[in-house]
Amino acid sequence: MSQHDSPIIVGLDIGTTKIAAIAGRKNEFGKLEILGFGRANSNGVQHGQVLNIDQTIKAIQQALQNCQLSNPDLEVNEVYVGIAGHHIKSLQTRGDQVRQDAENEIQAWEIEQLINNQRKTFIPAGDQIIDVIPQEFHVDNNQNIKDPIGVNGVKVGANFLILTGDRNAIRNINRSVERSGLITKDLVLQPLASASAVMSDVDLEAGVAILDIGGGTSDLAVFYEGILKHTAVIPFGGENITNDIRMGLGVLKSQAEAMKVQFGSALTDEAKANAYVTIPGLKGMPAKEISVKSLAGIIQARMSEILDFVTYHLKQVGMDSRMLNGGIILTGGGSQLKHLIQLTEYITGLNARIGLPNEHLAPNHIDELKKPMYSTCIGLILKGYNDYEQNYKVFAETFKKVEVPKSLTVAGTANSLTSQKVETKAPGATTLTPEQIENRKSKFWDRFKNNLIEIFSEEEDKLLP
Image (cartoon, rainbow, N blue to C red):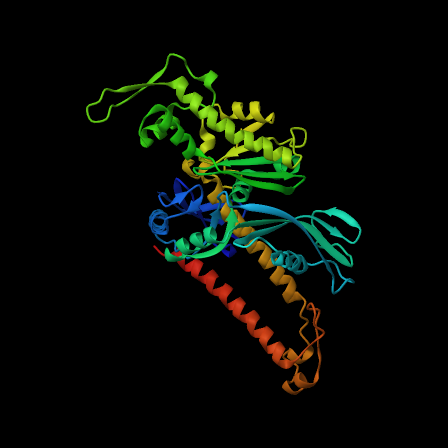
């Protein structure tokens, strides 16, 4: 696939502390080239959930304006949006289906159908399915198949992880995006987006846990033998640490945030005992001196609580230190705390490292984009590309199944069209009437025409001064 055939995908990360919009396109080497970038402070979101829609809309529009200022030729209409919050839940299911054409190998459209059937699974009232993720596939008596496409068998099935969220929380995100003049292409769970941005194939094979420490929540995703085994949302993040500092030391929130970033440490033992930070007094009151060791003690207490949750979830799914050879990858804005790696290794017993979103980025990008706080946004773009490539494959396979009869060639006559039966290998059909042929032709050409329009519009965008 050439670079000019690749669409421009936009990721929109609606977080508790920031809203980021990043537009990117894959180059000929399969790496992301960033075409636009904008961010804004977030005010209407708490713990990953949109509470004030009006304030969220203003922040989204500000991020989009900044994105378009970075590239005036960029036009943003559709976005992939990240979703988080403690309302996110997951459940395990199993699904099977008997194949209609057991003589041929399994095709991509059959797997797509199997996945879509799981969206009919019963879930509690008030919840909504966000995503259905296949885990181990099985074909007849063959178990633990990673990719069943091309395998032959009578029955295909899989174990699934179904991700659900509160219907009202999802509605608030969709409303905020729509009223900002955008279309939500898809909602993606933030830990999965972050994981795709910072994780390599080697990490996936070794087994790894991704901990995305955001402003309002910390999101966990656990992978083992190339499969997503577990997801969880921990209802604490960087904002909680800032509030703890504000309450514990009696300072303003802005001062607490500045101290956390500049002088904070996740280990009390690493903080200097005789170091102090001077905070200006309010309205003539005397200045206040804050011990750096006291500051570290507050940060360590809250970070230890978050990491205790991680240990609990890993034990729940049987993923102890012997299973995850890839250890823990820390990402998100909160991962930039000093000495966090040492604290993580001490509490979990796993090796730890900081996950930067430069695994899939093309070289020569600004350093700002390589910070872990943008992992989710870059992962959303990668998710969009994955959808695009999967849909392209399924469409290509479905179109190949239709054999054009001689009556539709230039040598054929219009009269023979009405009398000759058309053979097809499309699922669930044996013959096509002339009306069905025309409908299928018109649908294909409509889609083909739309693709052409998109390609040429992208070319025109590049030619604009």
